Length: 132
Image 1: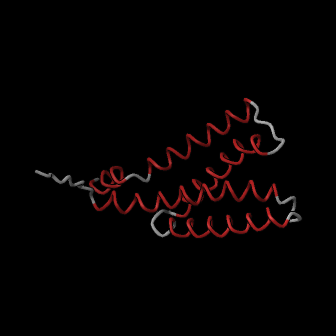
Image 2: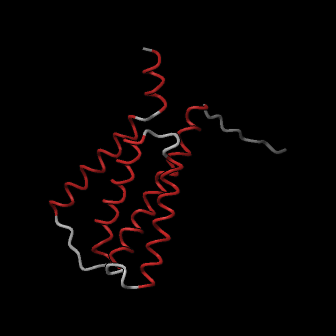
Image 3: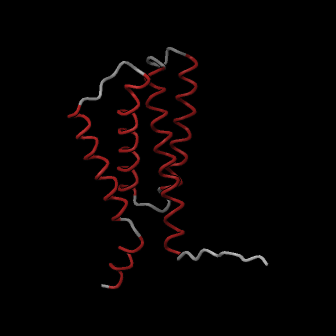
C-alpha cells in the first residue's frame, strides 16, 4: 500500500517564497560579483573580468525577478546587505583583507536588519495588517 503526502501551502506563502529565493540567489551572485571585481584588479585581469560580468548579469536578473513581488526598498536593502556581508566574510578568505571584531559587530547589525526586513514582509504579518 502506498500513501501520498500532500503539502498544503497558502497562496500568500507560495507567492512570497519564490521571490525571496530569487533574492537570496541575487545576493549570492552579488557576493561573487564583488569578489570577482576585486580579483579582476580594476578589470585588467581578463579571466576575473569575464567572471565578474557573468556574476553581474546573474545578480541583476535574479534581483529583477525578486523585485516583481518584493517592495524595491526592502529587496534592495536585503540584496545589498547580503552582498556586503558575503564580501566582508569571504574577502579575508580569498584576498589579503581583515575582519576585525568591530567589523563583525556591524555585520551582525546588518544581518539583524535583513532578518527583520524579511519578517516585516511575512504573509502572517500582512494578513494581520489586512484584518485591522
